[in-house]
Length: 402
Image 1 (cartoon, rainbow, N blue to C red):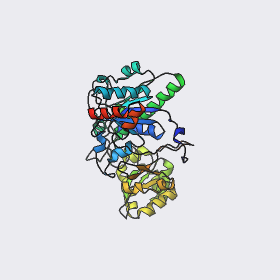
Image 2: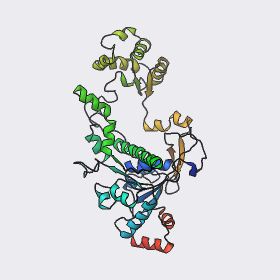
Image 3: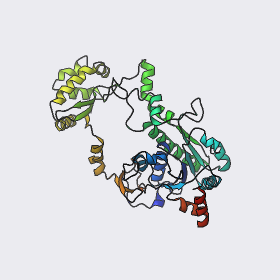
Image 4: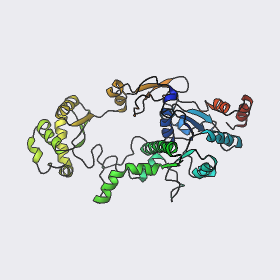
């Protein structure tokens, strides 16, 4: 477990400054993880509203659930980058920064002189990171790319859902994948700069990030001639592996990964050891080919018992299983409570929320779990650090530059 009360200046990325022109999910997810590790993240937002993800919903004490998730521990600076004075402030920030992250609309960074090549000329030690939809080159470089569009383009939607209907993944997987790769790419670039003195630009596209996650079904399709079928909560290429409804109405998922487990399931759960060597079920591929028969056997057995009895017996046999939780049951999960994974985080307006610690524990460190900023909350302080006087800051506000 992470240790408590570690000074902020001892966090792994303490001393690293990140400037980010970011909105929505992918780039903010990358920079929030940098902030968790101690980097100073200055989030540049539009005056008069800020990141449009602030307005996705109002469910968390009047704040957006997306924004609260993605933006803790950051500083918010409002700048109108269409004004000369706003751009001048940005340039001053970039001159002092270690990393610059942007997920601007296609072509916008280049038009603003913020491409990797442009920045390398002005700020040779600055690591630029661009999060794009389909890449900065190629035939789709100018297309907008939102999460569900990318789920569709990579074929993910064709794999999720039931045989009758495709479905989107329930979370923003393309955005999350891109944010994770941007985060790891930035860490790699920081390491390379520190150890070799070489600055490498980072680029991640939503499409190529999710394409990586499609590796297994891509190989399966390319070499079998047919893609894995949509089978709801079943596994497309392993059986039995899926959910079944117990007598109390709760669904239970179980997974059999090898022949030893199948033999134990037949003998001690289904009560029919003869099924072990039945040619219809004796191997993994055979069970997949005869999935309906396998499912019928398990559905009948599980429907005869309560979910607690089913999971207890499967545990005793050594078969991986879990009841299917809804989100409320996940929030109350005993593992999260027993491992002390929840922390309070302040949100604009004075309220607090319970937030999960980052999933990676680094011995001797405690992730920073700072407040979610209001739009422009730190504008005055950041400008003062840059040397602006109170009068000059007032002028910038009056001009609408900040």
